Amino acid sequence: MDNLLNIISNLGSPKILVIGDLMLDKYVWGEVRRISQEAPIPVINVSSEDIRAGGAGSVVSNLQTLGAEVFVCGIIGNDTHGNILLDIFKNMGVHTTGIIIDKSRPTTLKTRFMGHLQTAGKGVQQLLRVDYEKIHTIASEIEAQLNAYVNKTIQICDIVLVSDMNKGLLSHSFLQTIVKLCNKYRKIVIADPKLVSDYACYEGFTAITPNRNETELATGIKIIDKDNLNQAAEKLLSGLSLEYCVITLDKDGMFLYHKNRGGRVIPTIPRTVFDVTGAGDMVLSIFGMIVGSGYSFEDAAPVANIAAGIEVEKIGATPVSKSEIVSELINGRNQLSNKIKDIDILVSILNEHRKKNDKIVFTNGCFDILHIGHIEYLRFARKQGDLLVVGLNTDCSVKSLKGPSRPFISERERAKILAALEDITYVVLFDEQTPLNLISAIRPDILVKGEDWKNAGIVGKEFVESYGGKVIFAPFVKDVSTTNIVSRIIDRYHETES
Image (cartoon, rainbow, N blue to C red; front, side):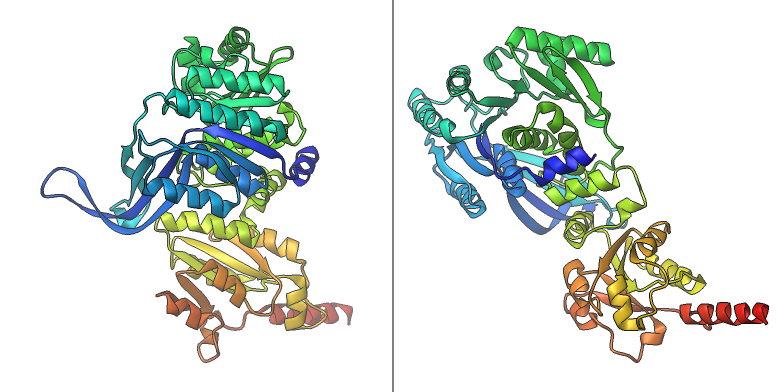
């Protein structure tokens, strides 16, 4: 683990050339509460829309988030969607001179309609995907422009990634030109291949990253166990003169095979899978980032496996940050530690919960010595929504509020104790005397405070109510407090001493 953390911390900013099928992903979000009277189909009441770079653009977004300097090569149409995609890339700060306009086709657009299910408004399901595209092979003059760009740009890049979604860009001749140029300039080239039965177009690549289904189609070998994996990987390596083959196995992890050292399965941690969209893009991105930074495929594989696992817990193709990967590496399988989140990671997680229409409850406190009053309070808070986030004062914050003798229990121990409670979903620490900044970042639907605060100023009340949130007061358990417990302990200690 220490080695992987060291790798993530020292990735730097490799120059990466991404060649592939560029597209725009549009997500239409809404609620489904009835079936149409016109046909047996759900009616979606649209609440919001968002647009993201898709296809090879997803790889670009991943790499930019991880800190790479990215050069993009592909085609778009001469249309509004192409201009939107260019603006997205330019706002990321990536190099876009390798994007060629092809007037013979539109910019590929995938529109996904995402509906909250009827049952209490919970869950998200993709109801329909509508694709606008033409996938004929690129014209020779377009390919010539792309070849010229690749020939010029590849020389200054550390690694080349190819994202092939079979949309007409990556013809057999273009792929082989890419390989020849990579060999000429001694560059590693990795491809996420298309779903076809003939992989001859990838001959000479350093590595390919097919999934289970793609591997079975390309090799004719049904993958059931490790023997099948070895047979399939060996067939791909020997037939295509590859150095590595990376077969992604969804819930079973990943299989890394080297031409001389054989293969090994890298298991994954069990996940709640929200959406598999973007998992393959994430694997390609991590291999590009780590191998492009001078590390080995063996170094990259476990990190790629972790990042893909994080990706499937998000909805849609959404970048994964270094901090999320580091948090996963540190916490690993420790379910309690995994409840304790940094604020940046927590905000990202909560955004995914909002897409599922989950109601977020927030409360905060020192929770120095956990007692029955705390337990009843937290149980009440959890019942107000779908998940409970607890803001926990750090040791420094507690001292400023309670005095130099507090806390009695360190922030790390207090956080782990809270994480052990079933009612608590996430714990986040804050250093300030009030949780206002935390509340502003989390934007809870419900803010819970004890009823003893009813006549006092509630920090964050105006902010939460400004966007339609509520403040709810929890019943107060009388005569129970940390101060009272400590006083009783001291009194009884003195009694026994006397």
